[in-house]
Image (cartoon, rainbow, N blue to C red; front, side, top):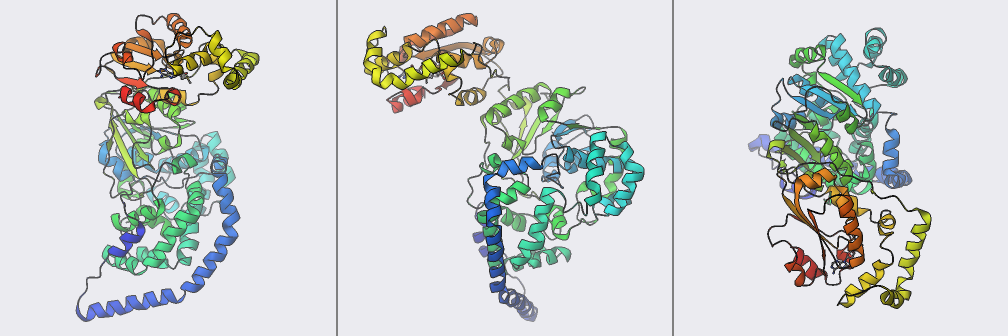
Length: 620
Ligand SMILES: C[S@@+](CC[C@H](N)C(=O)[O-])C[C@H]1O[C@@H](n2cnc3c(N)ncnc32)[C@H](O)[C@@H]1O
C-alpha cells in the first residue's frame, strides 16, 4: 500500500511549497517561523532526553530483537494484538463489489473489517487463533444486537468503558460464549480505553504520547484536532522535516523490531521487505498519499485517542447501524476460534466467494501456504471466487501465491499503509490448481542403525573413494559419473530414509510446483535419484495431471531404486527413467522435445553437477 518509493527524507524536502501572497503571506510565514524557532529552541534538550531514554531502553530492545516471535506469540491468548483492524476496508470494497449472496472468509482481527463486509450485506465467516481477537469482535456484535447506536458509539468511538462495564454486567455478558465471557471477565475491570488497548494500542500510545512529542512533532496531533487543510499541514511537515526525519530514523533503525512485535508483525513477515526505510516510507505515505488531518480515521483515531462522528471507520457511522443490526439479527456472521484451516474444515453451507486473507500469507512458509490454498480453494465457488491478500513484500512473495495469477490492487490511498502491496486473484482466471501435497515418506524409516551406517559411509567416502569405486559396478564413462555411482551404490537402499531428515528444501520445492488445471503436463526431474519427489504428489494427481514424467540421473543404482518406487506406485506407463549426465548433449536425445516440457526440477542435484552453467543452459 505504501507507494512511497523514495525515502521520507527526500519526499519531505521536496514537497509542500507555501503558496500565499502579500502581507498575509509574510504574516503567515512569520508565525510559522516563530513555531519553527520555538521548536528548535528545545531541540538540544529533546535530543538529550531521547538519547537517555534510548540508552535505558537498549537492553529491552535487544531482547525484543532476539526473541521477537517468542514474545509476540506469548501475547496471543493473553491480550489482543490488534485493537483496530490494520487494513483499510475502503480498498477491499474497491475490488470486492460485495452482494447479499457473497460469503466472505476472513481473519477476525479487531472485527472492524468483518463489520464492514456485513454492512455490504455479505455473509461472513471470521476466524482467529487468538481468543482475545474473537472476544473483541464478539463483544462488538453483542453491542450491536443489544444497544442503541448512541451507546455503541460512546463505547467504541469515545471509550466510555464505564458504560460498557455496566452494560456488560446487565445485558451483554449473557449473550457471549463461555470462553469470550472468561476473557472479558478477566480484562474488562482493567480496560481504560479501546484506542490504546492491546499490544498495538500500547504501541500507538507510546508513539503518540512519548516518541512523537519528544521529537518535537506535537503539531501533528494539534493539526488533526483542528482539521487543518492538507496543504497547510504539509507546509508544517516540511518546516519540521528534521524532526520528521528523526522519527523515521528512530523507527527504522532503533525501534523497528519492537514496533513490529507490538504491531503483530512476526519476524518472517519483517524479513519480506528489502526496503531500507520501511517505516520511513510508511510515514511518507501517510503524510502525502492520505489526508491525515481530515480523512484518516486510523491515525486520526490513534492521535486523538478517540474517533469522532466525522472521522471514524464505517461501522461507527450512524447511517450504517441499521444494516449492521439487520446482519447480526440474521446471524450473518460466524465466528470461529481456531486456525484458518480449522475454519475451512468446519465450513458448512454455501461455498466462499471471497477469501480476504489479510496479511497472514506473510506469516507462513511455502508448505503451509500451499496446503491452506489447496483446502481453501476446495471450499470456494471457483466461478465467482476472489482471493485477496496484503503483503509486507512489494511483490508476490511465495510460489503457491504466484500461480494464482493475482493482479496488484490500486491501494495508493490506503489510509493505514502498513503493507507494501495488495493482491487479488479471480479464481476463474487462474490456469493452475492449488492441490494438496503429501509430506510423508511412503517407505518406513529404517531406524537408528541404518542412519548411522549411511552416515559413516558418507563421512568416510573421501578416504575410501578408491575402494568404493572398485567395488561399484560402474560403467560410467566420465570421472564425475564414476564418482557419483561410487558414492551412491553403497547407500542406495538407505538413501531415502537418511535423506528425509536432511533435505528440508524438498517439500518447499514440491509445494511450489505449479499444477495446470488442464493437465497433460510434462515434467523432467534432473538428478531425480530415487524418484522420491514423485511421492510428494498424490498418485491420482500424478495420473490425472501428467502425461509424462522423466526422471534423469547419472547414477544407475539410484535409478534402480526409482524403478522399484515407480512400479510400486503403478506409474510405469507415465514415468520414464533415463540414465545420463545432464550436461551431455546426448541427454537431449532421450528427453522430450524442447518446448514441450512444462516443469524442470533440480532438487539438490545442481549443487552436485560440476558444470552448473551447462546444466542451467540445458534446463532452460
Ligand atoms: C543429493 S541427490 C538428490 C536426489 C533427488 N533429487 C532428491 O531430492 O532426493 C543428487 C542427485 O544428482 C544426481 N546427479 C549428480 N550429477 C548429475 C549429472 N551430471 N547428471 C544427472 N544427475 C546427476 C546424483 O546422481 C543424485 O541422484
